[in-house]
Length: 311
Image 1: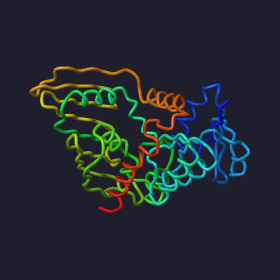
Image 2: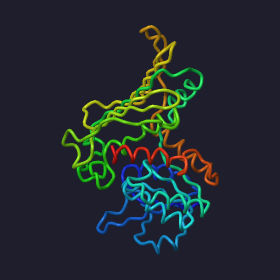
Image 3: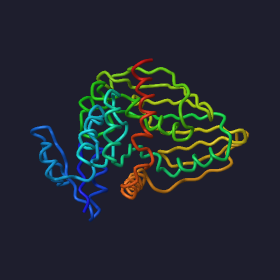
């Protein structure tokens, strides 16, 4: 029986916990720090202090608390011998990153930074297309409306709206940056603009337009959560064809000479990707070279941090 403890039971933590709760070989716990909170509705046993965590001796930590707490929490868990599932992004500051990497290496822990879109069937297909065809240009765009993300909650009190808690589109929507890295590899250059241009956040940026250069070709990324249009689109231009993948509608289209020549609708939804991601993590729990472990994820995180804080 594996013991898994959650640090953070917001919307994303609950999503992971629901999947894990269906498995009979797993015992779940939750670390909660705020006094007066209602007990979680999944009936997961809760603890409030680190000495209680030490008595439980969890095998795995799911770190799904606010972004600004990710790295410090991960260090505390790795020190105690836990394997780490860290919800994206790795954190909001890099000052403790070296300590985290050293602790993980010393303790020989397995780690994974969770970018669930890597498990989307169209993302897997794009990866293969890029291996077979020479890229001319890649464009990624994601837009949504932050107040509608979490029904029944004041979005301005959540971490997504707060610069201090690691919010803003660059961290919160870093799926798109991870996909460019996943497709094309290391960024040679990353430049662009971002800022706060609406009232959907307290002080965090609500849009970003980023131009990226890689050894495999150029890409640009647009992200915002101030739009009334919900969209997640990837357009890839090759010499012989163009591909448009709509990840929200699960629609794949191919164009030649301006004409639609192929269209496919994929079955399934994002919940399937979350299921597959957890399957992958648990099957590789003792594989320290698991995809997107903290050592693999650190270079992109440092580059995003540099872009966000030192433009």
